[in-house]
Length: 263
Image 1 (cartoon, helix red, strand yellow):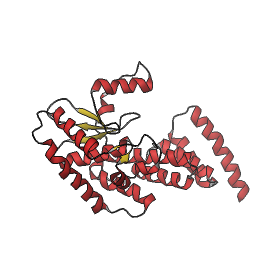
Image 2: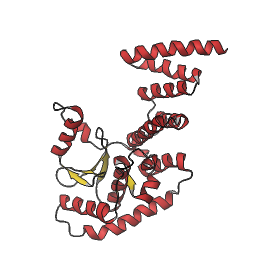
Image 3: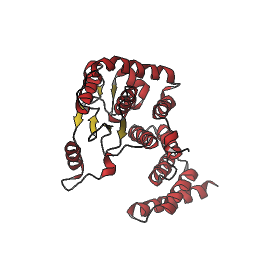
């Protein structure tokens, strides 16, 4: 894989969708984003500050264009397919943020995705302090709001570290999208689709040892015992020893016994 700057987020997100929905028309998706930018642009004229600009952008995208979070069916895999999100105007935080960032950049706004724990955000950088947007709820968030979200999730002692609010590289955004899809497919017992998500993630992040473990476990569930044992043994050579590695070691022993019986 090439360096992070070589990754085009829009293309990567559409390729992920295309694996499950068939061929995706990149020019069509690009035209939709250009059309959204053209529709939104007049509403931003005369913005008095960065905060005013973001408030206007939110109003145009979430009120006028009606992009919104799919709280009724959050785990519908279509919420993770960017081409479908552009069509239905329904999504989850990460896909809605991608739409937000892509439209904002076409309007000359310095926008980025932020892989905040538990809830993906958009970040707008202007002349002052960064502004954060929850595209799922259509809200501007202050740093204090982000801190409260972190404490709600991890407890009152949780503190925001600077890297939690830093822009996330495209390859890591794509890996997070794949992780969301993997969990959905595992819940639905669509194991072949989950396996494909693991494969793609490891192409993006070859050193993601947790993904190596997950792929091995999916192979095991598919009764592909040899590949399962190979992945899990490699995981054991890379992962620090802990309770998880003890469990995986026992699984590897079981898998090797199964493969020896099949020979």
